[in-house]
Image (cartoon, rainbow, N blue to C red; front, side, top):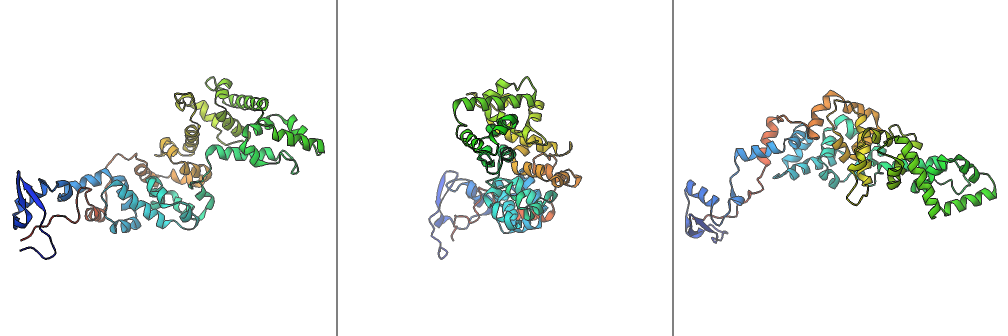
Length: 390
């Protein structure tokens, strides 16, 4: 007699013999296991989760589980979730991180960003070296992690624009920081040629007209060549390297602008220094069509500079800093934060979060129990679709 509300229509196949569930009756334990493992009902949707299954899941995701294990807030988030994949665990950490951010940080760093960046989420959840406290109290630090965060070269060009504009009287048309930030090689040319600045900056109507004309003609062919040549020469002089010659920079003017602009803005660690140390970068970022991937190169230079602010024993590799541009920027901006990252107490956390911890992570019994209760195999159906009737 069928149980009320259940329609006996599921068909099973055991060792090639088909049976209708309405006639199956109550199956013995052995037969039930056979049905769950073979025939029309796939084991993928009905397998019984074993201790070994959960153990494999824990082992392959121990870095994320370590973060959860260290945070009562993350454990609380996990207790309300069902997880079946690494993405689910990253989501638990991201949601926890989001809940711990306040003010401008909460408005700027969205959940999508946190889910995509498990490293950042983990550091926020664990408040490693006080990063969460910084983000919750420093709006300028928050900007480094926003989608609109300025790129390394844009920061340099903005400084160049300010310094070049400051050479001119406020009434002069060339007293325009944004103009030079958008046209850095023009600023480089003027910073290199003080006599030209003097000619354009006299407090006379003639000088005003000259400055206005100069500004309007920057894209003429002869001017472009002049500016390109100046930028490439300044960059070559700064690197003073056979690898990075003037002809190399002439072929990659955007890089020449970046290198030369940094020289004029007195950057504490100019990119020219890192190019000299790493001549291989000259070719590493050039594609088959001989175009330079400047974005990738700038990120590399930025990461190298940030890595230099950390101690030699720091477990954070340059490769991670290249991917984590916000973290690199914060290291460069906040020397106190960089110093804290070097402390021994954060070494294991940073090793785990950045993928450098090779030993087994030991989780607390509470977290072990929690994950075994919350974990569902991606092939396991929490609500089996099979109905066995009497």
